[in-house]
Image (cartoon, rainbow over all chains, first blue to last red; front, side):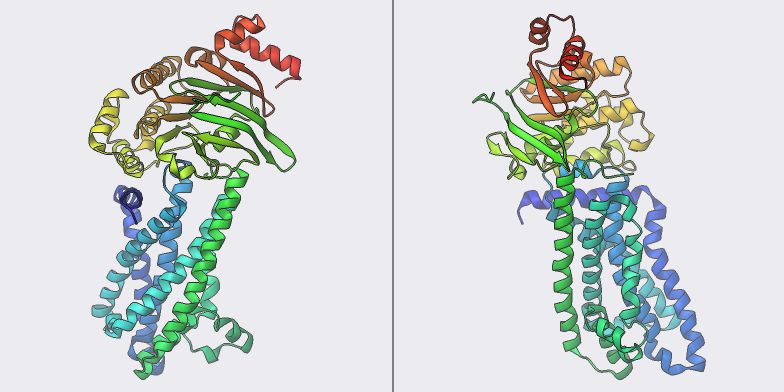
Length: 265
Length: 247
């Protein structure tokens, strides 16, 4: 990576930093949703711990909520940063500059990682005094779970931003819809065997399933299963390439149809 | 006709959207240090041409050579030497003028960006606006900021899409003067898409007239008026359109 590339990526990071600095609701929102989620599920967990302690053993519910949210946050942070360019009709300014599409992707991923950490770390820290649950006790595997879900989030984001480029802001609702499409198959709060056969088949092709199966094994049975994590990384590699492919095809199509100059509200 | 010393050479450039040719076999060249107007009515193909020259739109056929490079295949080798301004493309609205200029200076890899921003602040009378978010500026102020952004990297080739659209005559005149000054000081080339014939007449050394995606006439404003024995570019344009079936 040469100095020009670093300069252009840092330019976009500076742009998103200025944006956040200019709007305290945007800044607050980053940490707001994960914290609210954690509190709601925390009390749900407290309630269940009295009637069905096996459901909440080791803080499994809160940990699952926090870890799942890292996928959602990473995806939303990536896609919203891209949407900011569409809303402000600034995409053409970016694409006529020396910025290359892959530099834009790298910038969006970096911003996404920063925003995800700003959102998740306070929620995870607050869970310790509030509910006595520390996801950090998962140790190094937590980093593996977190990175996997962030990668899944980015893979979805690449496909969604590609679709936004090609179909415009009419496709904006996909930003919120797509991650939730994965949720029922991802076995976030229940083991894989809970799903009916056909859903289990789909779930086996999802990286998220292996992350949550691995996390449950670690929390409930104190059993570390690295093979599940590697399967998740492998599947994420495939998703990432597919997402990148969708973005590249959509970018090409948008350039062919003259949509880059018109993108915006 | 392609000149050997041209900065920009457009050869049989065409763009088809479904069955419609938005630009059809367009050829022209632009010499270093000249200001060229791309003139035409609505739907003439000006913005489509400009989009292809900016790399935002893939041509269906034809070639663009810019600074001696094949722009269609290798646009990233020359994008840092050009820039663009259009009232139809905004700068990030929540960012202040200063923040926008800082971001774009970094994006274009401008050395000593603080000095360059100071220079542009003075040139475009932006001092009092520097800490204002773009969304609070008037159209005229926004245009001044967009032009400052377009000149941030001291481009050798500047593309403008109707930069004075919806501006008052005094602001338009002021902007035209700034563009002329910039060309005189730096020797940059400017390509200017407009349907304002009077403006093109005042600013441009050369004019390319388009209708229905085709080049219908080319030359200096005075040459065109003499050739067609008309008193203004507008009359030339209207006469050509009458002959060719209207714009």
